[in-house]
Image (cartoon, rainbow, N blue to C red; front, side, top):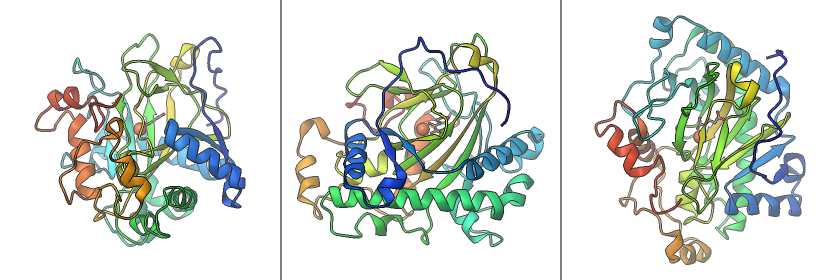
Length: 352
Ligand SMILES: O=C(O)CCC(=O)C(=O)O
Ligand SMILES: [Fe+2]
């Protein structure tokens, strides 16, 4: 990743986001925790600095590049399948990217936290050779760091939501099976392309941590239908956001915001776009409901009409929720484009 990349154009409107300093947050700094809370409840997106060093991130990109450069036939041996599973390889075109039926142009390789931590023991599956080879030296340390960072944030949310100590933590224990995973994403150079690279969606899990170098990520201004703004990548900063399951558990106090990936802007469109995400999700068997009986703050929040969630069936678990969400935008899902149109790539149509 040493190629000199053109800068993000300076004449494009971008979304300002708060910057949380992880060094301060992890030392218990009260002001930093307040900033995180504000960011997570008002917008659901924020920058985080001092989160991970280049030594942790760059080898993940190198591993992703080596993996996605393999012949298609080899990559397809690790296909994530069409039954709502995520780990393994996702080819471009598996999801809808707009309501006209265009499809995404993003390839991924997803590696399970459970597999990375247990390696060489297989918990879920095996991966292409470049992943296996780097599992202990590259993937595991990256995921280790991301899990620790997410746990620190989760404890802040738990306290601010006035939940009894451990209520969120016990739903995200690393030793329990989950769909937590790292994802390395490649979008090919797309000069002149207007169509979306990865369609509008909310993230399915609790917290996502994103590293990217080129622009293209856009967030929807809350309360609007189509005010999409770029989030400018800042060297050394990660971009974090809240996903659906934390939104549900918190009764909508924490915001899972709608985002998408457009081709990189300006000169940047001539380059491959690489991004890396860690998805922090609840353990598979956690019930995804507002924790109203554990916090009066959450109970109150669920009464506000503007915060009403699409009612989940009682007893829907995090693993089931993931499959439901996958089905909402996969081209091979039973309902096809109808489900993407009906949901707009998010779980709650009533909330922009
Ligand atoms: O590549 C990006 O900037 C964002 C990717 C993303 O939103 C996702 O994989 O859920
Ligand atoms: Fe996302």
